[in-house]
Length: 557
Image 1 (tube, rainbow, N blue to C red):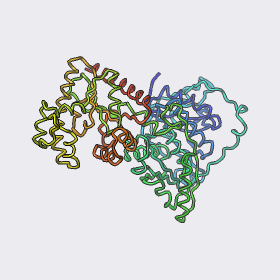
Image 2 (cartoon, rainbow, N blue to C red; image 1 turned 30 degrees about the horizontal axis):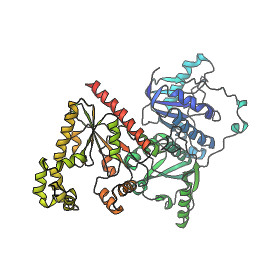
Image 3 (tube, rainbow, N blue to C red; image 1 turned 60 degrees about the vertical axis):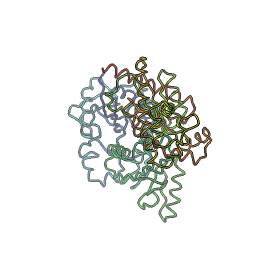
Image 4 (cartoon, one colour; image 1 turned 90 degrees about the vertical axis):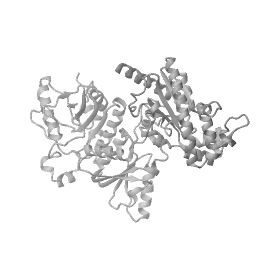
């Protein structure tokens, strides 16, 4: 069975039968398509009549809205690896369709170009006679080529899922009644983070596209609106989220005027734009919509219609994830995985494979290092090596005394780190003078420990170093792993562990690189925010994936 990267699925079953067919049809399509699956809706399309059918405008209906929700929900359950996108170019109200210049040629005056070029077209159309197969596939090819820009001779696949044959008499009467029309609006608004577009986002965006005739305005969370988000450091950059939204909506409904604007407070332009008519919300965000209307009325503007959609349940959520499909759950699933490939480290011996583990104060580096040690890694603790640098027999000892004076010595002639700390605190120039002496000495000790591990045939070393990135020690390691926790959690841990004030803990954190800055340099990110068992599973996942990478690198040589 051939596999294709991108496909178009043309759904032809009557609207009232589709909800029961969606899951098996998607499962069947996933046997042929591995990356992107576009879905084109034409309920009642007859590909076996002998004449060539043409695409027609389909009016937006409540059933269609419910079907889109069902489709994205089923897709998340049965083919979560696929990037599914429901195309709505041919869905338009009668009044808008009649007023458009494209009407004489239907919804597609010219074939629509999609972000990913289709390699196969599939359909749920049920053959009445196996002898019609060639005729139906030819008809499907021609129909799809009229709608979308495809290469000539696009392969066609008739899906034959094991579906219960639904006869008209078996369908409840309520479902066979005339479709209830969906109220549409010229200008529609939504707000959100839209990080790593998933099924719930696509449902919200697609139903907004159904509702909007002219303009679709999206307030995209930025800066202040991201502060309280779980694992906010892993949120895609604003520009990336904008690009993904625009690409998705260009495929879904290219006739819409799409505007994406930054959202730095809960309201944004929704409370000042006089043209807006409808805001799309979920059960979770309905109160926010009501607050928008309160502000609009205060501003002398008409209230918006609140169109509420269902939240999609996540059948695969874990104990730390939400029950609904959410970006925070997707970000949590990234923990322990390789986010960016390692930079060129061909100057390093392949073994031992060296992990540079870093993170802010209180982030749980030591706990993770201990777990990695238990799994077989050699733990190189740079804090302990720092103590060695200050010993009287160490090379850096005399240089520190020359630079900072003998009044930093304790009675036993060792360097009093607290006294030394007072000399450099708040003075960047003096701090740099100290680190210029100490960091290279620690780096030499790290290299010595790595060489020792190689002599002992050890496979993995973990260099646990708070200053790994500031000291530019990335050239000593194959990969950088960063552990993060929210600032407020770090403050709690530092005050409890070290008995310092909240102000002192904050000052310490602010003197270090921020989580976001560290994550920019990370190959792998971990977090100890949750229960120890969650961290243990995360570290085990990271370790197992690391073993596969080492094996692949070894086989590559």
